[in-house]
Image (tube, rainbow, N blue to C red; front, side, top):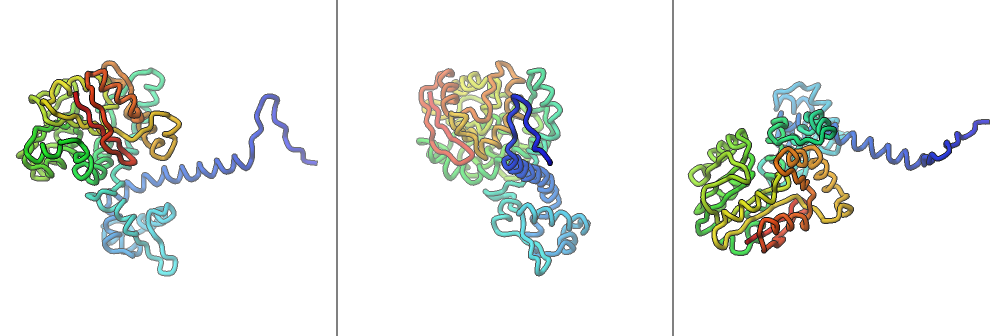
Length: 363
């Protein structure tokens, strides 16, 4: 007679059905993780764009169109179809993309594009040994210490959201700001990275002048190239400077996009911003969407942002002076407290998206 093993005293018995369900979830998560690498391959080789243009297509047709090996492309297509990232027709043996899949993977300049953000994920894997080390030491890891694909991936991940919302919804939601920008204002973009937000504002408001600041020299070099490519270099200037020491006079609007929580001393940065606003000027603070209660952030968006915060944002803050470590899920209450400690008295959530909160901050 086969007897069911009894749990040792004090040990909770595993529910087999729940265990199998959880293992099934792990298979799904592992599949998603490995699919991320294949998205990068498809993005770099132009496979998504080509399939959108010529599809439905066979592996041979797609390989010919992209100058790649048919055998590799065949396997890539099968993996992508299994991930439901593209479509497979068993009757014809051809692969294709729906308009929605193409918007996410092939339209680099669109507002729904997400493939570029997978480079950001790649940086987390490449930098894992460094992050694991600071878990033990308690030290930080600066933004500049990450793999270069983080800088490209961050710009490509956030740019579609800026394309969709910055000049059409976020700026108009700020009281009186858009009128000043249309008439001609001085605007600072602090922590501008590769300058996607700076360039976008310069394109929308040609009468204004824009100044982008970032402490990372390589990002500033790329931002200057982006401004030239967009034809707005006559009204955009970029300089290497931190959030606590940027200069250039006073500004009608100062913006920080998804960067305040990365700073070691966000109160000091906020204080410096207050000192450089013109009378009636506004600070537009854009941060990742988060509720104040951790339990309310335990969802797919929170999963993404908490993970990025663990690997990138919190180590960045802890590498700097003060090292407040706000994290990417700080929430409105903590952000408001930062601005109040810096001397601001007006703090209003102007608008939001599923991924961002936009605050209007004034002295």
